[in-house]
Image 1 (tube, rainbow, N blue to C red):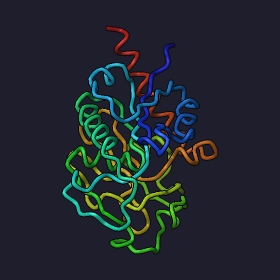
Image 2 (cartoon, one colour):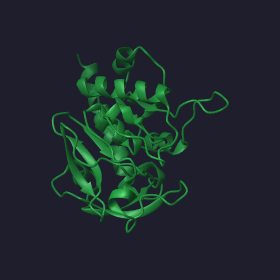
Image 3 (cartoon, rainbow, N blue to C red):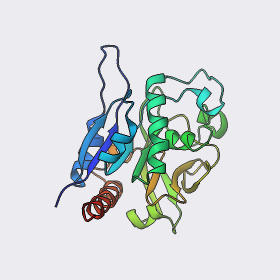
Length: 240
């Protein structure tokens, strides 16, 4: 059986001109049976990319430039990258239209939301306070519980309605973007997961499942289910 090819967006160029990404994304997809391909910002031939991929992961990273969602600058906004924003937002719109299996993680949820016409909270503590920490300052991950809607796709994948997740963000969606539905929440009411209402398989998570998937079977099941859907899509395409 041919393994599905999974595209993974990378971070933008660092000070040395290098593209890079945390290995945990790659390792989680490989455990699930996928063949990961890194997609650095700047590619213009998006249709060619999409036709070669069986699934696509939008990864974490710095903030999206507020002009993309009619937002305002905030002192906590960091690591803006115009090249990455332009590439990922355009890729997200094409991938949604193409019904390509999609998994958004942290910034990836925000990219899919903004690409769908949604807005972002510039800094979560300003609205939700600090009773539930969504990251440790300065810029470290933390853990908290999420509650998952029992009739959601995510609940059917993980087999649980509540679980502990690794969280590492300071922005989030204030309301559900067009075409999506909220299916998981943090204890403070923050939206933690979205599922697309019309797309065959598009899930966006505000937490980082890749950071605990090697030790937490519930988080690895998300990657397993995603790769399985990509495998099914590949198999159907091969039969035509």
